[in-house]
Length: 115
Image (cartoon, rainbow, N blue to C red; front, side, top):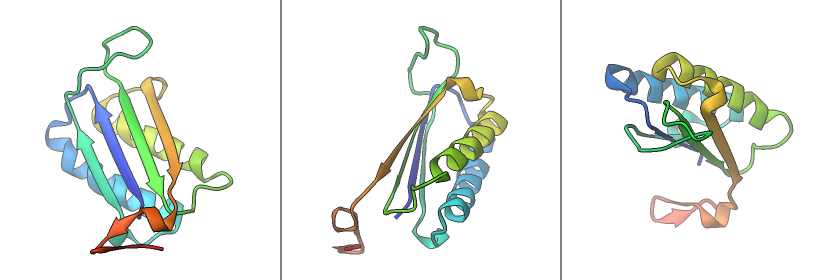
């Protein structure tokens, strides 16, 4: 269900696996979803600019079936930015995060859908 996809111009190096594990646990906790359904993706070394500069930046997508109400997007944004800054050295002001609440009938898994 929940998916967090990170595209960054930075290089993760040996920190990539730890970042993915922490993103998975954090997203599951903040969205109240079982971690067994969380998927994390990391694409590093992606050519990008932000604010006209090629300095390291990230674009993140967070998709979930529900659980993106109230303060949750703000909480996820805060936690994700902190993890990306810690692991990749990308400042929070060079990170965009897009949130999408996906209908269960349009999210496939295990040969079917969730709705």
